[in-house]
Image 1 (spheres, rainbow, N blue to C red):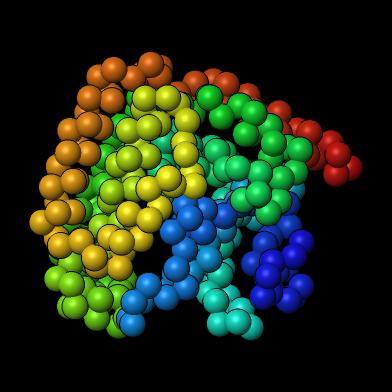
Image 2 (cartoon, rainbow, N blue to C red):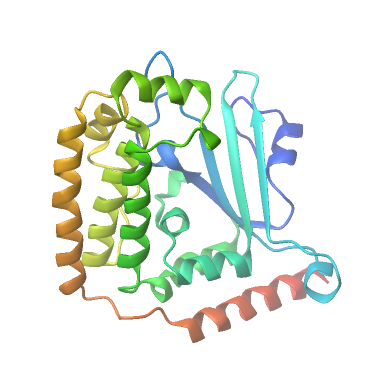
Length: 261
């Protein structure tokens, strides 16, 4: 596996054995990646994946829930990777977690690894499409809205704090807020997620602080209302298909370990 700017050793540190699906998420996937979007801020390159743990984590005492790793490449780009164990990933999907749903809707060029068992997740993604997504997307958006104007220094570096001081609000949170509401509206209306964003230029403007806070807040109010309308008229089932999800997990794990013996 090759990733630009990373040595083979770095890739081995980033990507755990047993990874069956891996793709870009965040700004690279959305088309909003800006290595530096202001004098005080920059984007990372984010990857999200699904892995099957060692057999001891299923039949023994070892535990494997997720793998999180961050590495600075030779070109000074920060790579941030999160790989979930299969069952944990499916549980997050059943909750329509906005941060993980997009992995099953990427265009081909945004996948880094796509094992045939990872492809089975993509092929069965309708299992996870339901109106429950409204609560996860809107809840996440409300969190972004709060942090946009009430930033916490606990998880914020100096560059991000400087950005808030300059513009009076967290512009990166604002961009996330608008994107997640639009994606949620589209998902509730169609059952599909458009990962590369047609509105990428506008999202970058917001991230760069080119929109006043009042304009962002007006748009957010409109989008929250549209999300509720999308829920009312959504063609999606009320709940995800938990039984099919359970059977899919069993099938993938069985085939993986049968092929490994």
